[in-house]
Image (cartoon, rainbow, N blue to C red):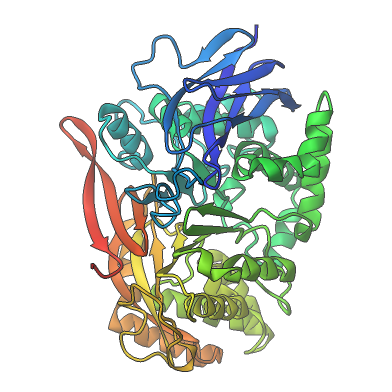
Length: 584
């Protein structure tokens, strides 16, 4: 008898029709999965098989716009979700209001494309999912787990409309004691890759550990999620450089690791990012579903993608009323050859430009999800740009060899480490934030660096304060200066830590002395002037945390909460509550 092994995860909710959603599940055996809603909406799907596991992505149709409805998951005629003994609230699907000819004054069109109380988008990255040992969690309370418990306990609490998980959803290279015991039962951990993940089956252990926690499971069944990978989903500092890639490919275990990593990401994360129409047009999804066992079709796709990253696009675009989200792959789409080094390959860069600039009048807020921060502490930025210059040979071969060692040792592989890409991305943001149809805010949402901060750029030809207070774009500023408020919002980790000496280093990176040291490195590396400068507008904050943007019309507000341990258990403490646009 088939049962529910993992899930359900509520993934895509259609903000244009308000009537469609997708729900991801893993079953224990091949079967047909049904999602049945209290309002009469439903959907069914047969499972597809990969490496002995059985998955379904159920398209639910007929939902009522502007409503919240409870749902059940059935296999055959048997209900498998919610569990009989659960103490958690029902899993629900919430749809946005949508204007109709009969009610033109109601819904998204009248409220700026959002629900009456705004669009709430919570985001963060870097969630090491290991359970506490003996009641003690060495990295502190899990912010996502704490959010889930808070929402489950208080039905009146405001829920996010969507969760953005910006990378490191699983840690293939940093496994827990429990996962290591499972790995040791399969193979000798003295052989490479040791206690790291080796194949697809072992990746499923990570997702089990991450998504089986009862509160997390309930939260992901109720709040839609958008995901993108970062390095630890595969391996620390994945695709740092051409030399790094050459060395890792020479190891006997890497091919299976990267193929399995891409396969598991496709199954567990990528499919749920897609709309029903995109799923219907996806040839890989069709091939996997058409076969009694889709393993070989998916393995072939993953191996071909590793050999030629340009053949697959992991980036995607979502719309939440008058809010546009563009999620960018900053890992697999890289060009690593030193003479052509780029964060995004040419086709990906063109896609990003079109996704950002297309029909700017259709959105009031532009969000770009980049797992890696665009704007780092200035010293860190200058060090990465200096290092990239050395590795490119500006100071000769000896400095280039030294630069490669420093690059790997210091994890110098953010946007600043791809100078031309940084400059092009900066110019793209300027274009998006300029002109008569510019949005109210342009925010780059990032994680990776295990702390949170806000930074605000200044373009060289922008007058003082330009782009800082404009709630309405009235036209381009002098020299095409931005009229939108542009911000880098970085929030990490959800559940992890950073050593105190690195915390001190990040703080030093913002200091006057750190900036002077950065300017020295820039001169030594002959990097040239940056097209933009920036200040810290908040932080740094260290802890397990989540940020939430509340977007209503052309207004935007930001909240940062941290999970703290108290006598009554973990709780969320508000660290920051700030309007990003002027009132009135």
